Image (cartoon, rainbow, N blue to C red; front, side):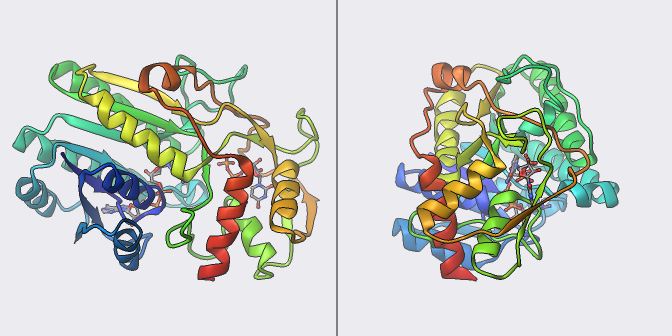
Length: 332
Ligand code: NAD
Ligand code: UDP
């Protein structure tokens, strides 16, 4: 089976490429390298000892997108490509709408032109907004508080409309919770540009003394210790969920939606303490005001993914913080 991964040199795409190659699938990557590096292709090949085909192209270019998909004729497409920084999306919303929506439309149309009906989409837990209760199930009402989140919501709706009109389509929407960590080889991992927005890459930079201290956004939330609680999932586990989704699409189920998390919430302080203990290093921190737009607590019900995707996470919080630090030490 041939799998085409858009955004395939990105953080989650690269880890998924490794799992797909290990499973014996043929893998094609397309990425414009706006948020990743070409060296990732070599790293994937080094880890798996297999060849991957890479196209450095922008999926907003319809002609290029059609050309690649017509040439490769993939059996399934996993669509990771997209811009993902919430804060940036508030500042340059049109860029986010253009990049995330146009690339998706181009990929879907190009797939249609070659009769490829199997699509897996990277959505996000951000579509749940501030949940009224926990854990979050797939039936919860969806909403968005920023342009990035709205691109995910809009694309989910587009996919439902498209599938309604085309009963042959198999579309799996995966709503990721908080992916962290890196491949155990430390050859691929999370490599954000500039000062990280997300907790784990910020912690690793503080541990490496590249940043003076972690600022913990709020210690007065109604949570176990006052700091924000999230459902962190190891990126290798998340990558494996896509392999389960590939199988699911073969069952001809139309549009399906799954949360991909561990089902367990950890606070910021628990993350810091676990990182310090496992890696035997101090992470200085101070408490500052809450970050605008943050919710107190968020974790998934993973019952549907366990039952229908037959997906179960295997890696622990210790694995997450260890691999994140190993990657940072090797690369920065
Ligand atoms: P990433 O930025 O590392 O990877 C996305 C890749 O897409 C990048 O390599 C980028 O260069 C590429 N890209 C962007 N626009 C493109 C275009 N027009 N044409 C070709 N390539 C393009 O991000 P990631 O963390 O791997 O996320 C993958 C997907 O998962 C994204 O859609 C993201 O919104 C979604 N997601 C990520 C998280 C997270 O916390 N990392 C959480 C929920 C959902
Ligand atoms: N967080 C923090 N300091 C940081 C970055 C994040 O205290 O420098 C907190 C944030 O308030 C949230 C948790 O860590 O409670 C996870 O934040 P992240 O941005 O990684 O994910 P998201 O908020 O998108 O779930």
